[in-house]
Image 1 (cartoon, one colour):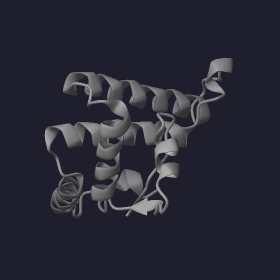
Image 2 (tube, one colour; image 1 turned 45 degrees about the vertical axis):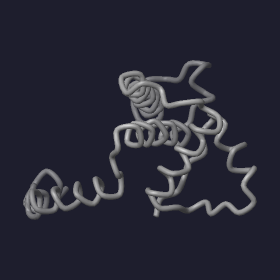
Image 3 (cartoon, rainbow, N blue to C red; image 1 turned 180 degrees about the horizontal axis):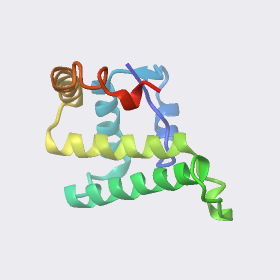
Image 4 (cartoon, rainbow, N blue to C red; image 1 turned 30 degrees about the horizontal axis):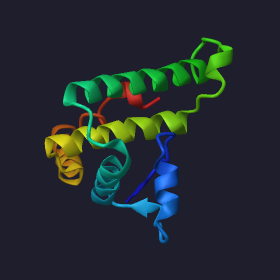
Length: 133
């Protein structure tokens, strides 16, 4: 199960309209919720290239928060309203949009990714001296 991070694109209002809301949901349910929201409020999905650009923009916003939180760079006044949780939620939203519009089942692709990494890296990180300190 994943925790759905509510973003500032109106999803909060959409969720409040539903009487029963299970805040925890499967990835498949998250894909369905995003699709419902798009059909109800978004008119249609943005084009794939637009969504890829939006995903890149959102990842950049997360990078900015992380650079100011964990890095040496100080925050500007405009950075103070940004938070990591919101940026990760925005990334998840756009990623789900891309998956939906391209027919990708994120549950299947995530499980496949875990399997691939497990086979490829079964001992790689365990034997990495750099990770032992």
